[in-house]
Image (cartoon, rainbow over all chains, first blue to last red; front, side, top):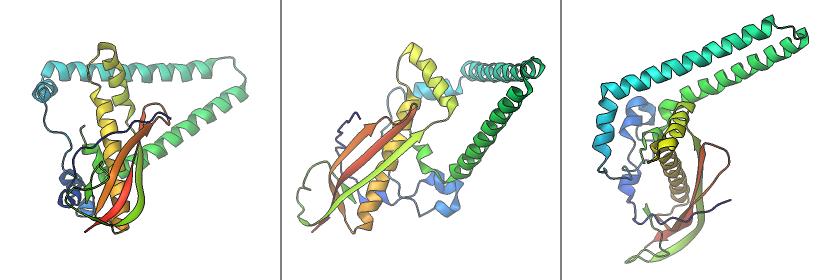
Length: 131
Length: 104
């Protein structure tokens, strides 16, 4: 295990420590007042405005969106073709059944994990931490 | 709650030592962020997806440590340290620990 010692150089006050995340409180009213939360740890940095400008840039947004759509489309197509090829292949039926069970089980497990994450997400204040 | 890395809080007296307090967190991000981070790895610069991931784990670990200290009746934690380790690919584990004390 690699270990790094850090020096969090400043003391934190109790008033900042008990403040709930406004974002979390907005998403989940039950969390308001019950969260231990501090002020953002990092002050703004010089390149922040450039990152913000990039995030608003239509060319950047379009490229990212097109990239993701094409990549997901290709992946789904390949997966579909793989399933079709398996079904049409001369592989023994038992192999097809076990592979189908494996894929179905994996999908079910993934959906269960995804459902749990989506349920926890509104109550997770740490997703607002930037750096 | 005062958190310091020093063994004492200057100007205050430790009236009671309440023992070790710690908090750990292991967090991962979704595969989309992982893909973008891998691509950024090709061109260099800050991998802000991973910066954010480690920051999330750090804050959560710190909150857990603070919560344990508060539960013990402490009003400060001295000698705060962070350690990290790698339990799995693409996840960040941070352990924060220190000594809970009551200041006069």
